[in-house]
Length: 71
Image (cartoon, rainbow, N blue to C red; front, side):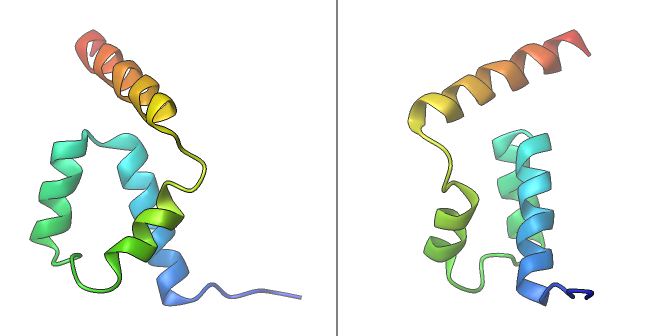
């Protein structure tokens, strides 16, 4: 059986990919430029960061910064 994702699921998946691959400030600018501030931000934030902690986010930020310096 083929399962078709809802528009909201596709948007969340795309935002998650961008968030994982963009510098946070760049992601925020992209989000603002695309008017992605509409909708239930708190629900989206909870879904995007459900598996994260402050420590895990900090580690990802450090890793991103190191990778960015290397390129």
